[in-house]
Amino acid sequence: MTFFIVWEAYTRDWQLMQKGSRFMSTDDPDIIDVDLADYVADMAKALGIEEKYLVITSVQSLGFLN
Image 1 (cartoon, rainbow, N blue to C red):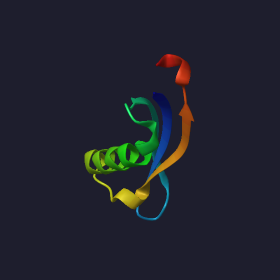
Image 2: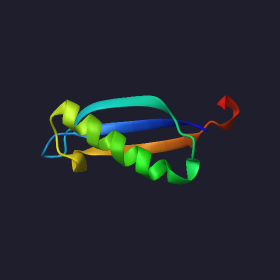
Image 3: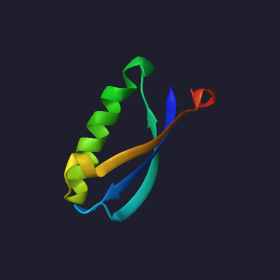
């Protein structure tokens, strides 16, 4: 199943730093939360911020793209 993910990254004082989106595919939609946690960890590391400052704001299922 495919999902459309929207995220926002913030500075330590919660000023918006960056916004982004991506499509994410998973074989098991029941564990999308695990896939999202891995994505947050990877993106936070890439942006040089703590994970708590990378916020997933939207997750939409796009089942028609299977």
